[in-house]
Length: 446
Image (cartoon, rainbow, N blue to C red; front, side, top):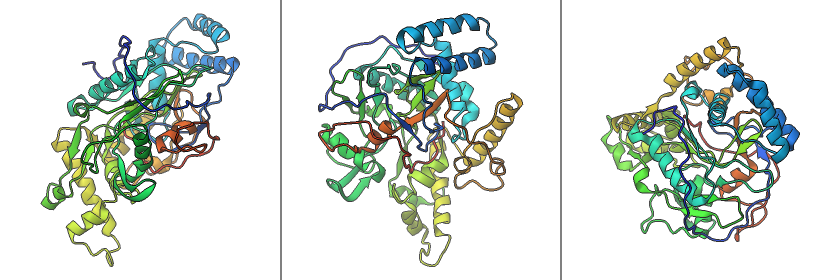
C-alpha cells in the first residue's frame, strides 16, 4: 500500500470485453461551464485551443513549477515543451510535473475548504491507460487505496490526456459512489433512493443495467466509461467489496437507527477535467474524506435528495407546525449521528469547525508565501458554519479560470445528469452550448 502523497505509477494495460449499448460519442473539443462543487473551482476551463495557446499555458506552468520546486534547467525544458507542442499540438508532462500540477489544481480550488492538505495528495500516473476495462480495474484500485480501511487518503488517478483531434476518455458518473434513484414509472413518480440520480439511473437502465433483484434506497450505480475511439462505452457494476458504507445511528436516540440510513465512506468526484499547462485530462477521478455537514445538511437533508429532516423531527416529537426551529433541531441531531457513526466505524471524517480553522491556517501560509488566496465565501461557510468560525469573517477574491485547475465541462455535466439536449435514447450525444450548469451538491471535502 502506498503512503499518502506518494506517486503511484501506471499499471500494465490489459485487454477485456466491454458490454453496453451502442452510443454515439460526442464531438470534441468540449466547452466548459460554471458548475459548483468541491474540489473544483468549477469556472470555465481556460481557453487553450491551438498550439500557441497550449505553449503559452505550458510555459506559465513550467515557470511556476521550476520556481516553487527550486529546480534548474527551466530554459532547456521550455525548448523541449515548445518543440513537442509545435509537432503534436500538445505535450507530455513528466510524472513529477503532473504530480505538482494536480496538487496545485487542488490548491487553486476556490470552493474547497479542505485545501490545506493539497501537498499530501497522492497522484496516480495512469496516462498510458485509455480503454474502459483498464480504467474500470484502476477505479477499483483507486477506491481501495483511498478508502484504506477507513483511514481515508486523498487520491487522484490521472488517465490518458485529451488529444487535439479525438473525443476524450471520460467517466460519465459524477461520482464513483452514488446511489440510484428508482422511479415508480419511466420519467416520473415517487423515487426510492436519491432523486438527484433518477435521470442517470434511467440512463444506465437503458444501457443495460438492471440493478439488484430487490431495489432499495441505497443501491450503488454502475460506472459508465467512455473511450476515445467511438466504441460502445463500458457499463461496469461497482464491486461491493470496494465500497465501504457507514450505517447511521445516534449516540442518544435509539430510534434513529430504525430510519435505516447509511452513507458511503468515500466521496470520489469522477467527471471533472484536470487542466495542467494547457493539457486537459477529462478522466481524473479525485477523492478524499467527507466533512459531516455535506452528508447531513445536504445529501440527507435537502428536499430534492433524501429529505430526512421530517423523519428526524417525528422521532424527536417536534411540533413542525408551530416550532420555527424544528428543521435546525432536526439537522443538529442528523449531523451528530453522522459524526458519531463515522467515528464509531473508524472512518475518517471532519467537522466544519475544524475545517474552518484549518482553512484559516492555509490562507495565512499561502499569503506568507506570496500567493493570493481565492475563495467562494458561500461555499467555504456553508451551513452550519457560524460567525464564530475563523473562515466566516473575511472575503476572498474570486479568480478567473485556473491552470492548474479542476473544471466541469458542459458535456460532463449533461452526461452526469442523464440528460441530452439533442436527443433522447438512442443516446446520440452532441456537444451542448457552453452555459452555467445548476447544481445542488454540497461542498466536497477531500
